[in-house]
Length: 272
Image (cartoon, rainbow, N blue to C red; front, side, top):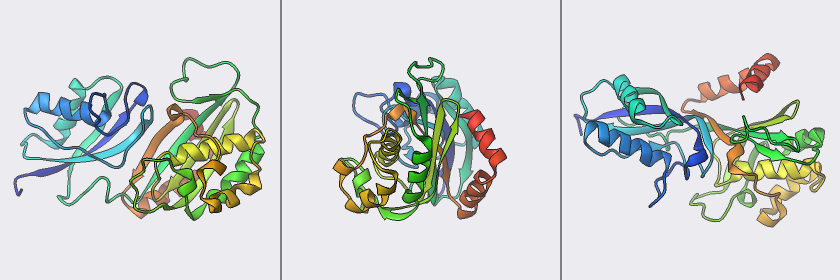
């Protein structure tokens, strides 16, 4: 394996037309589309390792993946070549060689997801693929109050779905905040990892708080119950996007510190 290089990719994609990241027989997935594009260009197969799975319909600003290759082509040019073959809703943002031991999944220290809610009776066709439209009036103050109880280390087994392969359901949420501007609500969650459908279940629970179906101060009790039936509904996948994957604690802390600046939050809201 001495001649093999480890290539790291930073990938953006619109998940609307795909059945998630991981390869599935007979279905279009991000992983398979990229692997097939590589094989068609360079003539041999690769195994692409992602930082984690994203569900059907979920998007990514910055997914991280890596693969091994003995290709002599410069790493930067690999990304450029892939973009010439990939569909327009998948893009390699950067490609470069990394340490042979780097593993996109196992080396990740944390992730940030954003969940977008469009609170109006009439859908906006320009953003409909990226937001969960909620018709009912939401009490945003109660929703913000509820977010605080998710912070810290908890057993989130009540917030996962069947089919999870996680060895433990204990996760730590470092930061969670709900931003509100006009008809948009953006939930941003940073943690050391997330269970299957965990963020979507948190988002659905907060929406149910906003509708008055769940009391904001009951969230702590709901977490402790560890019972999926006591948790709110699962919010639609199209509202969820993977924003960042962190491989250094300093990188994650820098992002969290930046998000404590109101001006930076305003900039983020204008981008989402």
